[in-house]
Image (tube, rainbow, N blue to C red; front, side):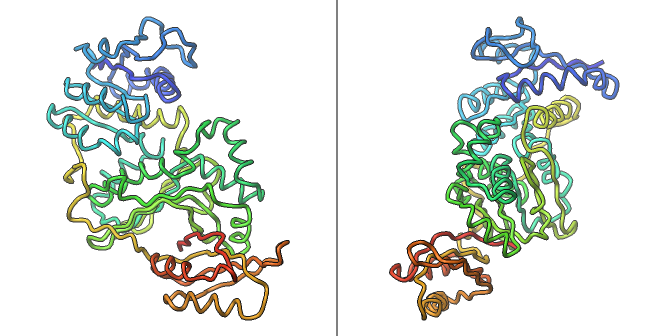
Length: 425
C-alpha cells in the first residue's frame, strides 16, 4: 500500500474538517485506492488551544520550519486563509518540492501566477478545488469536464453569506441590518462581514473561474464589484411584486475576445434556475456552445463541504501519474488577447422618489430617452410622508454608461435616484 505523508498549515474550521473527514474515510481510502495518508505535522498558532477535532497534541507545532523543512512531508494542505503568510508558506512548500492543496481563494486569486510558476519549476502539484464553491466541483468542471466547450457566460451565486441574507429579506421582508445581525449570531457571517457583503469574496472566486472558463488570466482588478449593503427591503419587495428575485451574482461573459466580469446585486426572473437557490447554498449556471445550459448547486461553505473538495484534491494529487496545470499564460496582468468591457448591456431596475405632480413622469421618460434608454415596466407605490411618491421602473436593455449618463441628467428638485439594480434574464 502506498503511503503519503502530509502536513497541515492551519487547523481552524477548514483544517478541522479535513482532519475529521480523512479519519472518517481512511478505511475506504485504503480499500478503494490502496493508499494510506499520514498526517505528520499540523501548524497552529497556539498548540495548547482547545480545538473542535481530535488532532493528537504531539502532531501540533507552532514552527512553520518544522513542517516545511521536513523531507518526509511531500504534500502540504493550506487551510490558513488570507493572502499572507499563507502565500509565502505555499511558495516555500512548492519550491521545496512539496505538492500543495489549498482552499484559499484570496491567495490564489492574487498570487496564482507565482504559485503556479513555483509548482511547474519543481514539477509538483498545485490544487485548489476548494477555493471556489466549497463542495461543488466547479474547478474540475471548468478545467477538465468542459474542455470541449467554448464557455460563453457564467452566472454564479458563490457567496453563501449574502445569499442567506437576501433569501431572508425576500422571504420575510426583513431589513438588511437585522438579517446581517442574525447571520453573525449564527456564525454565517464574520464579525467584520465586509469581504462577503461588499462582494470581495465573490470577486476573488470569479477571477479564478473566469480565467479557467475563458482560458486567459482575468485578474481581480478587472472585476467590477458592488456589494449588498445599500439594498433595502423596499427594493426587494418591489422586485418581488414585478416577478423578480434578488441575488448577489458573479457574472462573466465572453463574446469573441471581449470579456466582462462583474459582481453586483442582480434581479432575476422568478423562473430562472438560480432564483430558487436559497439560504447559504451556492450555484453556478453556465452556457457552453456544445453542452448548452448547465447548473451546479450545493454547499458552498462549511467545514465538511469544504473538506470534501480538499480531500478529493489530496487523493487526486497522491495518485495522479503526472501533475497538470492550466494552459493559459498565467501572469500577474490580464491576458493581452482579452479586451475588458465595462459598458455591458443590461436591463435596469430604478427606484426614484419623485414629486407627485403632473408632468414629472414625462420629464423622467424624456431624460432617459435622451440616452436611448426606454421604460419597459413602471410601478407606483403610494405616497411618502414628504409628499413625494416612490416610482419604480424596469428599463429595456441599455448600455451601462448610457443609463448612468441619463440618471446624472435628472433634476433632483423633481426626483432623486434611490436605487439602481441590474436585471438579467
